[in-house]
Length: 204
Image 1 (cartoon, helix red, strand yellow):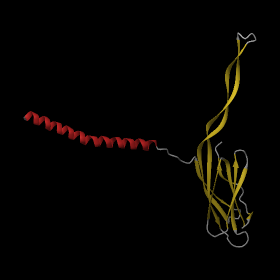
Image 2 (image 1 turned 60 degrees about the vertical axis):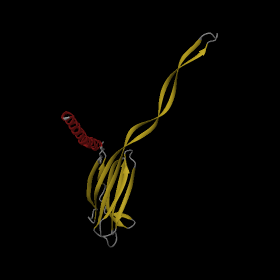
Image 3 (image 1 turned 180 degrees about the vertical axis):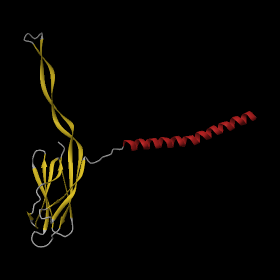
Image 4 (image 1 turned 45 degrees about the horizontal axis):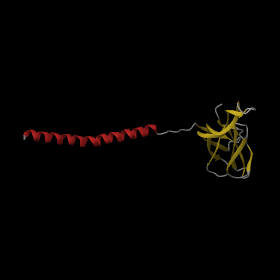
């Protein structure tokens, strides 16, 4: 009888150990899975970023400064790919008892893609106006964006008030970005140009 009791007690203890150990193992597996997810989580950072300025109009009554950020973004570029397939074409001979075969090359097209990248930029600026009364009371900043093909376009902003004005614009694939700080009236800049100053230059 004592032997039977000892066996039953031992079995109960073993079952208790299994019941306690199972949650611990499950927790360990959950922790490992969470760690694996965290380790493989993607991270991103700007391809380029820097401050620019401050730049002044020639009379020092307008000032511009800011920050430029460039992000490198991958995308699929689709195109038609041409490839040549070799075919064996056979025809019956003149006597009809022997086939004459020849190799024919035919061109085929199919849709294909390659990874390419675009460079998306954002220019942030703060424009200060140190003379907000009288004629030519506005501060102006004009940005010149030059693409890789040499084409250029312009963005202009004004501040005719006492307090700083904040502006932002975005684009893509710029080779160079410049800014000109000047004075003018409400309709546009009219003098005291700083000349083109550097904001961003793409890596060669």
